[in-house]
Length: 310
Image 1: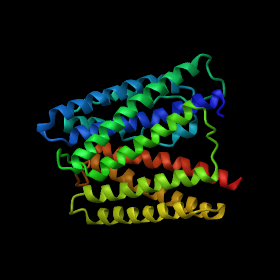
Image 2 (image 1 turned 120 degrees about the horizontal axis):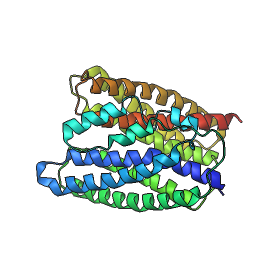
Image 3 (image 1 turned 45 degrees about the vertical axis):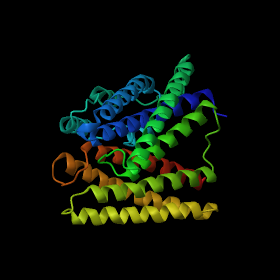
Image 4 (image 1 turned 60 degrees about the vertical axis):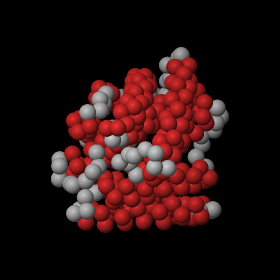
């Protein structure tokens, strides 16, 4: 069972990461509809604003509480995030609350293990609100996915990308439920396998989406993205098949190496898109979004490696 300190810190860290991820999913959805679907655009923007409100509640809680490891990982914000938001807002006309990004750049790490009294209830209520809002977002995304594959609605997002964001929201939802139950979150071999099965699959799809959203003239970048998609698909299968510690250590090592290289590729891609050096239909904020997800996964992998060595 989680201690009070573990519950508070882990809750704030996971909300700080995923509330931003989910609200950006809604930005990408809103930007993908045709002028006919003004209702869907409005609904997506309104739901996005509710996630922004929850994120605005999380940031003050995080200051002086979360680990330096999380803050320095690049999963919360990157050097490109603010520019990516401003560019995406300019291209789409969708309002983005950039003050949240500015506030996140000045969050201070925890200096000690002292948790302010009374914080547990605030965090509990934050998690409850996040659960309800994420549940609603998942049902909304599932309906959209169904309408798209049945050709009732058109969007510029791939159906598989819609399914991808449903999976990510579901992953966040399950973590929140475990936190609210105070489940033991100790990393075991089984959990290392589960995490790598999930994230290697996500990374593989990132490679596929990047490949498909680059301009056909960007042949070299397309080839690189395609290779990453194949590499992570192999790692996804290897993680599913790993049943012993030794086998999982091999997968963890290879996953760490590939995620590090993929993050560097995404970093250069994000800069290139923001600087108008790469031709694509990738929104700048989407490029920064997948970069942060790689940084989050890389931090988890480094944690797994330390545990495997103990």
